[in-house]
Length: 105
Image (cartoon, rainbow, N blue to C red; front, side):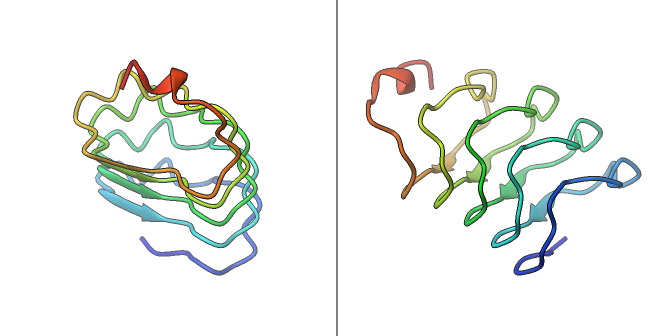
């Protein structure tokens, strides 16, 4: 599902898409990762170029293998240690000042 370059402020009303494997919401107005809990089949999540400041809301997404969080306002990598299938993690152009939080990946 590609919904890039819109003016979407929140991820919502996707709970019925339980078989969705790819969700792309780049260049929107997102400030939080929320509303993803029911997307348990999700494998790829693209949310670059938003206003997200914290990595959260991914606890039920155990099948994620790709996350793009580039060009947001993230200062610390957290909330991804449980993603054992993660192969690609894009987090460039953020506010990350240290590699310390990457030890658990």
